[in-house]
Image (tube, rainbow, N blue to C red):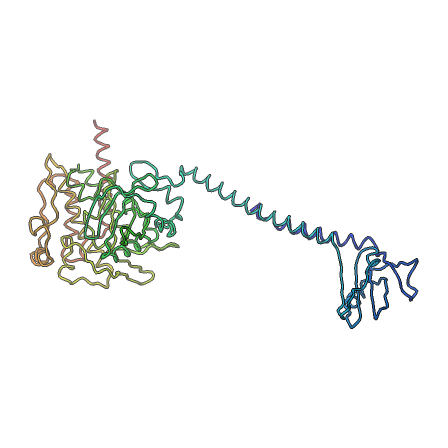
Length: 500
C-alpha cells in the first residue's frame, strides 16, 4: 500500500514544479521587446509588454509588444499578405523576418525551449518512477510469496517425502485454497510432455495405468483407450469439481491429451499409491481387526464426502460414484483407502435443482450392481437412488475386507462377492437371478461374530444389503457408526495397556 501511494505524490510534485516555472515567468515582470514602428510607442527602440511581436503587412514591417489580454486575437489573425510572429522572450523579435513567400497564413510561435526540455525530463522521470514502482511491487509480492512458502515448509514444485504422497507443495503453489481441483488448465496441458512413463501397473476395459515420474516423483497415469473417451471427459469433469479434494478421494493432478505413435492418447494424472488397488492388496495381505476397521472407515469417509453437497461461496455438488468396487479403491501407505475412477459418477445440486447423469454409455460392474439396477426398477430421475446403489456396493467392499481379516488365527482366501453363486464373468441375467429372484447375499464366516469389531461391521453390511433401497443405511450413518467403533476400540486398547 505504501508503494502504491508514491505515484500520486510524484504527479503532484510535477504539477507544482510546472506551476512554479509559470509563476516565475510572470513574477519577473514585463518582457523587453525590440520596438520599431511609427506610432510613437517605442522608447529607445524598445518597449515592455507581455508578448513581443513582429508583423509584416503588404511589405510594411513592425516590431513591438502588447499585453497578454490582446495576444490571442492579435497573434491568431490571418489574411492575405500578412505575417505575424509572436514570442515570449526578452528581445526575441529582434531578428525575426518575414518568410520569402507569404501565403496568407499567420504564423504564431511561442518558442520556450527550456519548457520543452523540462517537460521531457519530467516525463522521463515519471516513466522511470512508474517502472520502478512496478518492479518494487513485484519484488515485494515475490518476497511475500517466498516467505509464505517458507512458513509452510514448501519447496517450489517439489513433491515432499512422507508416509503417503500428498503432493501438497505443488497444489499450494498452483491451486487456490479450497478449490479442490488439480493444476490450472494451462499447466495441465503441458503435463504429458513432462512425464516419463516407467512401467505399466494395471490394465482394464478403459485402457492402462502406468507409473510415471514427474519432477522426480512418482505419479499414476491412467491412459484411456479412444473408445472410452466419454469416461475420460466425465472423470476430468468430476475431478475438476471444486472442494472435491479429500484424504479418501484419489488426488487429481491433471488431465491431458497427447499423441503417441500417430494416435491420440487421453491421460489422467493422479497421485501414485504403490500398494495398488484394494483388490490387489487383499490378494496377498491379511488384516488385524483394528486395521480392517480403519480401512472400512476410510472408504466410508470418502463416500460421505462424495455424497455430501456443500453450499458455500465455492459450492460442491453431491456426487454418486455408481461403480464402487475394490478395484476402484486404492490403498495408501498409512493403511487408509481412497476412492478412484469417477468416470460413471452422477452430479446433483439441490440448491441449483439439477441432476447430471452424463452421457457415458458404459454401465457399472454387474457383480456389484444393486437389485434395483438389475431388475431395472431404479428411479433414474432421483439422485437418492444412485446413492443407495453406492451403499449396496459399499457393503460388498466391506465383505471383501472382512474375509481377509484374521480372527482367532483364522482368515479366508480372497474371493470376489458372490464367487460361489455366479461364474467369474457373470452375465446380467445370472446376477439378476441370484440377487433379485433368489435374494441371495454373500456368505459370512462364523468367526466374524466372535469379535466385537467384526460383528459390528457385519451388522452394517446386512443393513447395506436390504432389498428395499430406502431401508439401507446412508453413508453418513455408516461413517458415524464406524467412527464410534474406532473410538471405542482405541479406548479399550489404551485401557488394556494401563491395566498391564
